[in-house]
Image: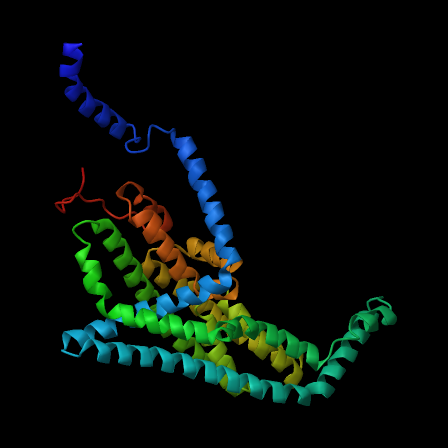
Length: 380
């Protein structure tokens, strides 16, 4: 018994080292398969909960993303001697003015569209008759065709356009809540860097993950904003040259949908293509679609995803899958916030744990990064 007690202090470190080598340290010896199943079950519960409160989570994360975006302005003002309340006030006003300008432009443009569409009743009736005659020549009975398109008129087009803007309008529907969240987040953002710096000694990996999320989000928004402005200018010029009504509205729509990865240009081309059909027939509609495909598809679906992937460390496939997933979880707002949400999830689940950082090589679109030791030398 005495020998066993004497050997016990030497046995415990050996057992701990053995558990650490087996990848089971701190996990009560649970098999890895059980841990994966438990983690998957927890993930399903979390995703179901997010879907249940999507109307709350979406605006909160939008406010967080905007606060993270303008936080460098707050830090710059503090470094130049501005009081905390001045930095907070200026930052909040900048965000509010941006939101009000975007919302006002959308409301004015949509109201102009609503006033414009009734003028195309005659054109829409002519297109409907041409459709009936064309299908009748293929052997389809006229009565069936007329029944199928009986309810189709300019109001149907208006409903379609309204549904496209519905997801964007939902962002503004809870504007009071969003503005309140932004106010409190901008207040906290003044002293948050100092509080974050105070936790570096105890939780350096958490701090690094949060900083990586903030940096990646700002880079993503910068790239999307630059490309969105380029695409919007091209679209406005092309639509004005083709004579499509309200080119500024469709340029604004192209700018907003540019934040939706991969498929944003498809959403942006539908309304001007329909107006082209009503304005000049199928030829003008095809011209709008062709020019949009040349400009928007090349820039938004080929060039931009590559640059975004290099900027935030996500491949084009991961970006597209994140779009589908977050749109399913949070709706239209999830599509707009898909990349920042993925960056946050990656930071909290991958970057925070050194043992899972190898997943970054699988998520990124480029070659795996060179692994280094803490001293900075390449790992053998």
